[in-house]
Image (cartoon, rainbow, N blue to C red; front, side, top):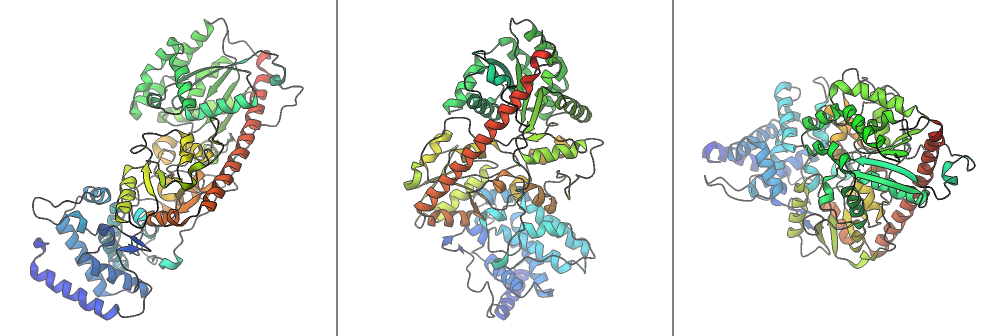
Length: 628
C-alpha cells in the first residue's frame, strides 16, 4: 500500500468511514450478518475480508446493495480506490493471485507486501462490478472493461460459488451482464433471501429410446443351444464397455465369448476387482492387435488426431488379423472412442455401439463431416445398433448432422455385483471426488480446519486420503461429494449405483460448461448448422472464460447430476457442510434405499434394451456375407 501514498490513503479511508457512518445505522438485510461467518460456520478470511480496508469496504458494498444499488459518486470513487489499492498492493498477475488465494498459499512476500491472507480477492471483483454498474451509462467502454476484468478474475471455475462469500455481486450476475448492450440497463444482483439462479431440469429428454422388441420365436438369442456369441471389443476407456458386458451377461446369461482389448491407462492402478479382471483379459490378448494400437499411447490432441486420420489403415490391418483366424468374431462392440466403430465398417458383421462421447471427438476438422456421414450410413444397416449413453449427446449429434437421430440407452453404473446394504450410517467420514480440480479439495479442507470444533464429520479425499477406494467400498462412508464436471460422467453413475448418499452442486452450469463436451474444437467444423432445431441455442460454448451464461444454463441442465433423483444438492461449501452436519440417519438410509431402487430400474431397462439390440443385430448375421 506504500506505493499509493500515505496522504491519498488517509483521505480515501476517511471518506470510506464517513460513508459507512451515514448508512450502516439504517435498517438492512445485511446489518445482522458478519463477514467472517456463514450460518454457524467460520469462513475463510481472504474471501470474507475480515481485515481493513476490506472489511469496511464489504460493509459499504452490502449497504449499497440493501439500498437498491443507486448510482452514487461516493460508491463509485470508493470502488475505484479499493481496486487501485488491491492492484498496487498485490500486483496484476490475476491468475497467480487467484490460484494462490484459492490454494491457501498464505505467506508474506520478501519485498514486504502483505500476505494473500489479507488479499480480499472477492472485494476486488466486487469493486470492478460496482465500477461497471456505476459507469454503465456514463462511460460504457470503461464499464465494460471493468466487467470483463472481473470475469477474468473469477477464473474458469467461478470460485465465488465454492466459498459463498457475503459479497452481493456473483459470477452469475457478471456473466449475465456480458450480454447486456450499451442501451440496456445493467442487471443487478437479486437480494440474498430470494437469490435463485434459474434452472430447467430436462426430464423430458428420454433416457431410453431402444429398438422395438424382437419376437421370442425370431430372436437368435433364444436358440443358441450351448453355442456362444463371439464378441470382439476394443476401447480407449473401459468404463462403458465393462458395463455393457455386465448388462449383456445378465440379459443373455452365459451365452457370450468375449475378446476384449483396452487402451485404458487406468488399468495400471485400478483397484476394483471387476475392472481389474477385464484389464487382465486385455493384457493377455492377441499381440498383433496390441501392436496396431501402440501409437495410441500418444497424449496430445494433435497426436490423437493423427492416429484417427489413419483409422482406415488400422481397420484394414485388423481385418487381415481376423481373416487369418479359424473363427472370426461374430459381433463387434465399440464405445470409446466412438470413431473406433469405423474399425468394423467394412466387415459386414453385427456392430453394437454404446457411445459415451460425441462422434467427432479427436477427429480432425477436415474429416468430421465425412465421419458423421459414414456413421449415418453405418446406423442404417439392419445389423448395426448405435446408441448414446446420455441424452445430451443425442441432441448434439442431431445438431451436427442437421437432424439425424441415434438412440439413447442411459448408463446405470452397474458394472459389478452391487453391495446389498449401506453400512455407513454411523460413519463420520465423507468422501470427496477430486475432479474437476484439486483446488476444490483444498478449499473444502480449509473450511474443515476452520470449523473442526463444530463439524460432526471429516472429509476424506478419494484419491489422496483413500488411494482410489473400490466403488463398492464407498458405502462404508457417510456420503460421497461429487463435483459433476462436464455433461457425461460414467463415474457419477458408478458411485450412484453403490447407493452411498451423494451430494452434487446445485448450479451445474459452472462445472458442466467447461469440459470437453462443449469444446468447439471437438464439435464444430465447416458447414455445421447455425441452429439446433428444437433448442434455443446450439450445444457449444465458444468462449469458456467469457461464458455465455444462457447457453451454459440451458445445456448443462441435461447433465446427469441435474436429472438423477434422490441426491443432495448444495449451493456452496458452507451449505454442503451444514447439510451433512445436520442430516439424520433415517434420511441417509432413505436416500440410499431410493437410489438403489432407481438403479435397479435403470439396470432392468438396460437389459431389455441391449438384449433386443443384440437380437436385432444377430437376426441378419447369417444371411450376410461372411467376414472371411
